[in-house]
Length: 426
Ligand code: CMC
View 1 (cartoon, protein in one colour):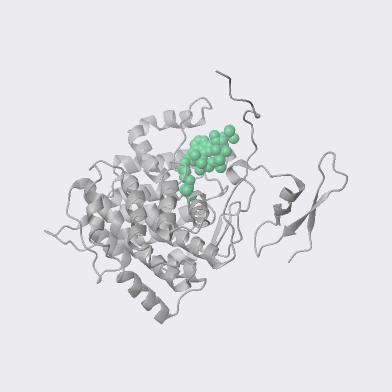
View 2 (tube, rainbow, N blue to C red):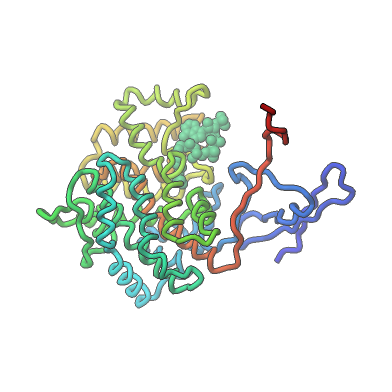
């Protein structure tokens, strides 16, 4: 515990207010402003640009240095040596599993992949052309109807079961969203497949034909899930924490995280990348779009570039770029016009003064969008895949919060509306 104190002097106050300064194991010190309310002040920080909303031991990011650690382990090492399910275990439990723990965890996930048969009925109510994220928000939220009464969130074993169910069932629901959109029968999960193989099987196989899943594509899928597994207190994770702070059902919390993820400034960016590449249409038009991105009077931004936290290269993008090359090479599509546009765009933006000055590098979504497109996953499903990958992060943060003393999240405001006035007499 640090003995540092920040002194805040406000106009008109005789004495400065002492604010304790807290130190984490890594990262900047944090000024504890909790005591300010008693002195009649709130702090003001729209967009939480400099506000730590909680204490956490799960993930650490140093955006300036391009560092991302899960429970202390660098993301590139996890991508190289671990796999998605092992990383889920790490996020949830704080340590890498032993061989037997990993087997037990993998089996638990494998045997929770089926969804209740009644869930199938929900899909019938959604229009065929509904956005899959709209369906995901609905069907993941609907899981709370199946697992509510028997769930006591103060019981660690109950929370563990909810975590396993969510990690296991979200791929099943995600693939069902896709099958619904193309009018094909849903595929039941297969217990003899790995997590990622099973997902690709449920996405692309049909009862008429069960093709073998390519190991390179299954590996790429696994790395995409792993690279999205957690990202500290981002908008969707903060949403899950805020929703969870009321003591609500965890499936409903995760559904609120999925809703927050959907937006183009967050998880919707990988879909927006593909839409942008289609809009550019031809390599000859790249300069025109770069000029639009720089024009302050044009709201257009280069999708898949820039990040709120990484003002250096996104370490996940480094790994994803390599996987992207492998997948395009494996599928023999590196000369596809769309991928050529992507490559040229990346090169031009990396050399352009505007992007260099503002530290706008390709982010993880730039490459994941390209990989998913090459695998044959439609762009409307990209954010669904992000939500699948992010599920262990959301649930780990929810679990971390519920396991400790916590308060309902309740931000304050700087009120700029009308002062009190009387209702006009008629
Ligand atoms: N294209 C063109 N200009 C940009 C871009 C972009 N993609 N991103 C930021 N800028 C400019 C912006 O106009 C501003 O310029 P100036 O200083 O001259 O006013 C400067 O760079 C700083 O931008 P900002 O909006 O203050 O930065 P931010 O940290 O608030 O926003 C961001 C981060 C990710 C929302 C933004 O970079 C963006 O909209 N990127 C495109 C969408 C995208 O790819 N999002 C995915 C993020 S990664 C996935 C995730 O972790 O959720």
